[in-house]
Image (tube, rainbow, N blue to C red):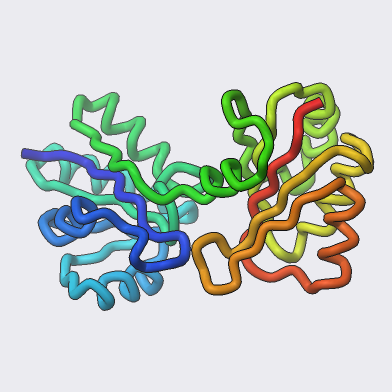
Length: 222
């Protein structure tokens, strides 16, 4: 019976994957991967030999119809991103939306997502929060920051190492130097680190220590 499985993959430590996820990755007809080279490392570690095909932000519109047709033809397909849960700041939304439209069953497994451990570790209120993911790089960034300056809930952002200093500087400008922030990087990896403090303190820390890895930034609400 045709079905699309969204399968979370480890964000660092390869042991952070469920037994069910491993079973399904072996059982489905094909696995769509954001980067097949990255997924091959996971497959090699767990001796998975299921066929892989590329599905990423640069080709998802072009190949969408092909995979919907395969699903309607009775195949079972799994979608994975390089790390974490598909469709969370990664490809997946278009495929899920089309499956829902076509009446194809979709099953998203629980599993690794970077922002959850970062939020829990932050010490900030977690009963209500908003997930912003990556802010716009250029167009719309200032407008978004102006709106978020009044946000009262805890805010969650993703950021890359080469933009983290700039982003923290902008947060200081729009949110204030004394706003509390918790910055986590390399979650579940050997050099995992969480730095907490005021915007000014945390920015100064990463100015002195060259930023490496992927970052999750948790900001206190107003």
